[in-house]
Image 1 (tube, rainbow, N blue to C red):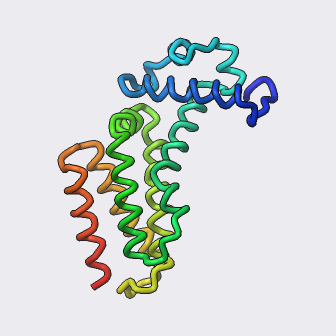
Image 2: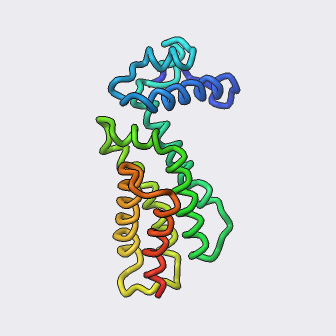
Amino acid sequence: MPSKIVNENDLRVKRTKLHITNALTALLETNSIDKISVAMICDEAMVNRATFYKHYDDKYQLLKQVVYALKETLIGDVIKSNITDYRQKYSFLLDNMITNMHTRRQLIVSLLKNSHNREIHGIFMGAIKEAIIDLVVNDRDLNIQVPSDLFAEFYSGGVSALLLSWILENKYTEKQIKQIIMHIVMQIYK
């Protein structure tokens, strides 16, 4: 637990945490979390260890913060959008998520391939699932004969697995994966 109470609204604190977060993100582009030390993070962020420990218990707490911030980047715009047509909203979700995953591909791959990948994988799956479940449960135009919450759970698992497979294997282009998933999605509207 961080040793001192810190004013999170202080611009200096925000700037310091941003430097530390950016440092870990940069290091994760070329290293697994197991190979990254707090000293490396501090060197990259140009802060001392005491400053690091003032804000974080360890590198894993910082890693979780980075992953949750990435999660918000992937689905945040969709949740905040005012789109009411579910097909358009789903298309926007998919486009936004795939574009952001593609842009941050190296970071996501590095995160998923580290030794804590079960937890990180769960966070990514949860982010994707959260966005899809909200859409599916509230969409009255879906042609399904099972409870929508169960369908959403099943369906979001498939889409999540497909997206993570795409990001790890890099077999399809960004445009191709969007088309493939949208084709699958539109099948449930027939």
